[in-house]
Image (cartoon, rainbow, N blue to C red; front, side):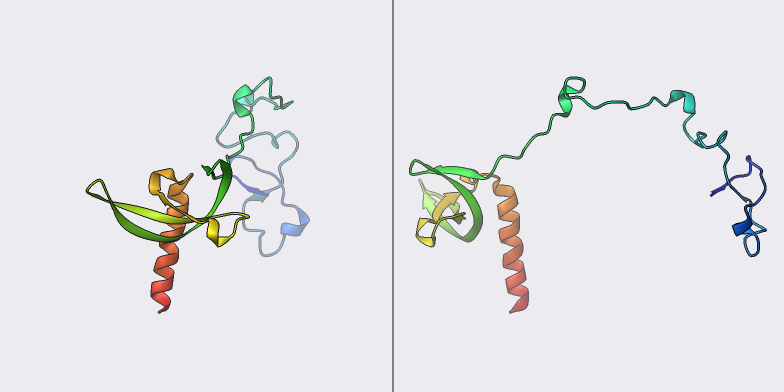
Length: 136
């Protein structure tokens, strides 16, 4: 049902009663393609999808968070802890990274820039630290 001051018609039987004073109409086939904002002459039918027709719309998969350590690729599970160390006279923060499908003895301390998709993992790590502090 459409409220319109331009299209007039008789009220359908279900609208009689409480709604009879409103200007509600059932659009006929003639008016069903009208749109209040876009002229129907500008609308084109979408007939097919094809990767050859739209090459830029190919699906992309996000690469997993994989880092090479000791010659074997590992996928980042989470960040467990952080520490500050001094390297060449400068303070540097490192993070203890846990890996998927590996035991805790395989966890490694890595610099922030060495963690694949580090921003996402660091946000999650910092948020979990705030949650733990608020529960104490």
